[in-house]
Amino acid sequence: MRVGLLGGSFNPPHAGHMHIAIAALRKYKFHAIWWLVSPQNPLKSKKDNFNNRLLMTHKFVSHPKMHVTRIEQDLGIDYSLQTIEQFNRYFPSTKFHWIAGMDNATLFHRWNGWQLFLKYIPITFFNRPPQAMALQTNKLRLYKGAKQTNFQLTGRTRNISSTEIRNKTFASRLKSAIQS
Image (cartoon, rainbow, N blue to C red; front, side):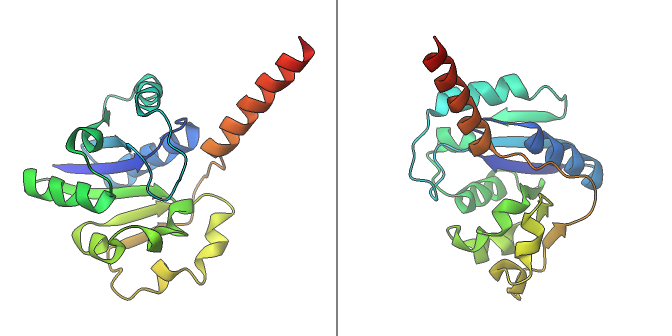
C-alpha cells in the first residue's frame, strides 16, 4: 500500500492544501492521503486550539481517498520525524511518502532531525509561488543526502496561505465591529 502524508497545522485548511493533496494522489497513484493535523508546530510559538483545527479539517476534507487523522496528538508526537519512525514501526509493509507545499522546503532544514527524516521517507515539495525562487540556495536542495527529495516546480499552483486567511478574517470581523 502507498500512502501520502500531508502534515500541517491546517489553521485553516484551504484550497492550496487540497490542491497539493490531489496533485500528489494523481502523480504517485497513492491508495490514500493521510492529513496529519499537528498538535503544535514546533517552529511556531502561537498555540492554536487543536480540536478546532481538527474539526475544520474534517469538515474540509471530503475526498474518499483522503483521511484526516489526529494520530500525532494521540501518540504525543512533537516532531514529524517521530511520526515517520512510528509509522515505519507499526506499518512496515506500507510505503509512505511525505508531501508538502514549497514554503516548507525553505525551512525544512530547521525541522528536528531533518537529515534522518530524508533517509526514512521520500518527500515531494509542490510549487507555491513565489517560493520556487528561494530554492536556488536552499540548504535542503544543496544537501547531498537528499536523494529521495523531489521539487515539483511545474504545473498549476495555488498561492494561498492560512496566515493570510486568518488575517483577512480578523480584518473583516474588525471592520464589521467598527461599522456596527
